[in-house]
Length: 167
Image (cartoon, rainbow, N blue to C red; front, side, top):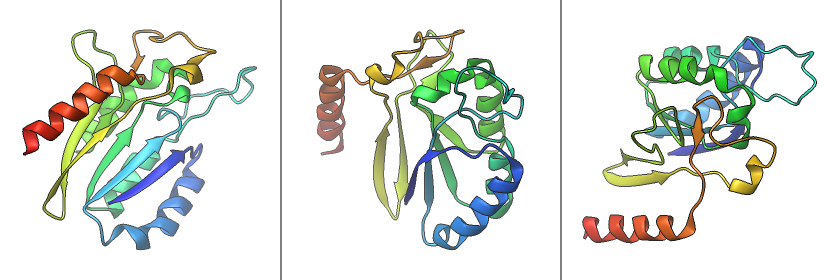
């Protein structure tokens, strides 16, 4: 498994270069986990007065066409709420390409803080949260998009539960 953090690729040129550079490392793994620093959009004004971090949507199609493994996009990031209106299209793009996402949701009915997958015959649980203090400049949820935040007691109970179920 490969875990890439703080991925923020704002244009198609850089997406292609990123996948070119990383592709050699993807072949020996079953899963690629990418912590997206922001949502997928190409509709962000660079003249905005606030700092906006995002990823170009071609990242998903480029990975789909050149990488035949499972990709999990982690969205529990403070910059996910920079462009909350891009959440629905990001979720659809990820899922429609057969990939998975964790760490954020637009549902009030469920949380989306964990996922499990197999890597070389071993069951791996991925719990994806954001530090709440990183959301100091944003309201969580914003426009219905909720970032999963670290709640230590809840996290500890969930880890104990996972461990007891796996024995």
